[in-house]
Length: 223
Image (cartoon, rainbow, N blue to C red; front, side):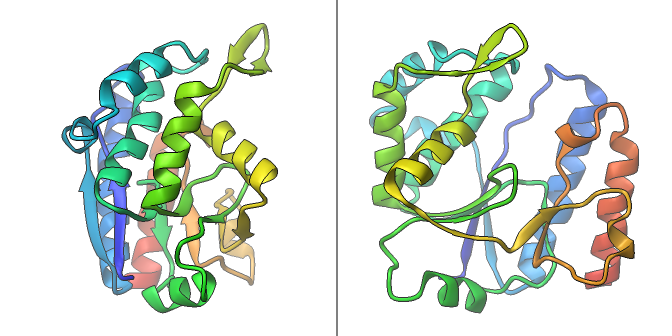
């Protein structure tokens, strides 16, 4: 239980600044997990395409309403195919910096229920222990789901996070809080999470500052 999975595809629809943020944050984040004792694997579309339900799943995702661009929308769902194809396990967003979360922490959190999913939660679900059986269950639920959706302004929207949160509620999936957003004043706080989420979407138009904060945290913890 020392492998961690990421999903990355170059997404160009939000411009070069955000693309640069995602590329650089991925590099730093993956290295932080390696230094914490993990074996990182970065998956992509080629891994998702190997799944037997790739075509039907992609058709279903196209029918799901979203406020996001089509590349980003598909990537958030395609990663579930890739994770399932690899046998499931711990997956983490590429903007979640490891601040000391080890494989030992995961073993303690999972306990004697290695076959059950576990969500490491904050406002945005960015880190999940998802065994293969649950990944396949998520894929099937996505294929068959027909709403209701949420509304953002006048637009309907539904992303993989909302599907996961629905399953959390409906199926009483265990939740552990060990990660948190990094706000501008976070370095003044005394208590640190074990994983820091440097989400690009939380600081639109200010990605350079967010990247500098991530680099600073990496240097502080890992040298």
